[in-house]
View 1 (cartoon, rainbow, N blue to C red):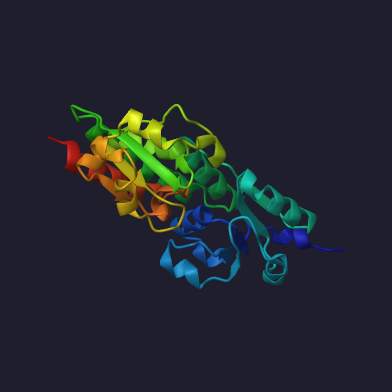
View 2: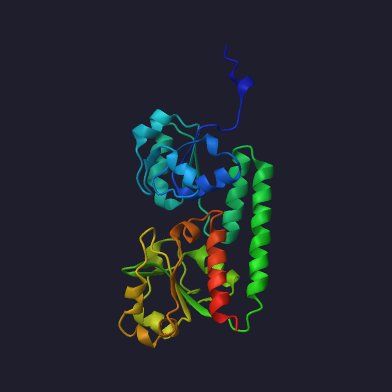
Length: 266
């Protein structure tokens, strides 16, 4: 008779198929439990030394089998097939699907509970809430909330996903495409003439890991009549700081808030 039930423990060999779960686990002091990561992982830098198990929508199943994880953390419907393949192969998979700032905080609590780090997760969430509230309070003092266009991709033009719009509002801006919603990128395609019509005061761009060509944005036909372009208010925000729904969004929030305060706090 096996007595394995005497040795029940929290997951100790974790694979993260996207980057935000790596960030969360490191901030909870559990980076040593991670045995495999997405090739897109950049934060924290030391995590890059971990074995790479795939990209965003593809994995190396044989590599994962070699690493023998007791938990795989995945993200969203975009990894539905990955989740299916892993479950079918016999792995335990926790798939997060946070799309809002609140959802990000809840995901931290859920993952923390799953790995036996309830209190560190709660502390991380409380610290993030305090930082978010402080920036929101400061941003609320602006006499004018500048209109902000966030560009997630350039061909076609895709506006920011849900939590990005929230971050803009918290930072003191006004998301000019707040009415364009959708978890999937095709649902957030916008047209250049509509961006011009809505006339943003500030343009922020993060092209999903590709370096933003701000000059090409400034030179788009007709956009020279746009307030943001007239005043050269076009800035890149690193994808790792705004497009990954984890604790790193605080860096994006801080950068966006700093830009807004510098340009419009007059």
